[in-house]
Image (cartoon, rainbow, N blue to C red; front, side, top):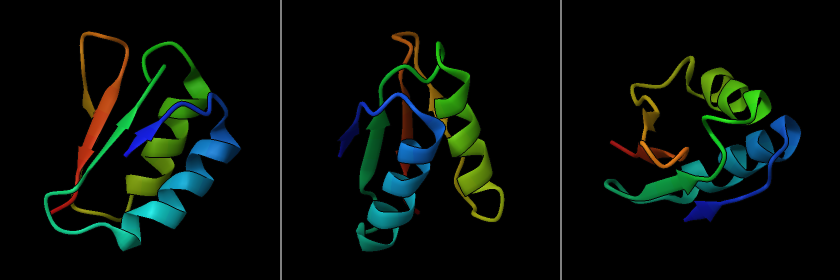
Length: 67
């Protein structure tokens, strides 16, 4: 799944909705992770109690692979 929603609240809402519906090995790719603090903050907040971590890519994106 590809996210390009730019804001903390919308990024967090997408993560909360899609993550539980994903299969193991499913991928969320997010745009503007490196540029917009709200996007990165939403990932940090969402992943605080999960085993995964966001993998920052050189393209300003981040990838989350569900375990």
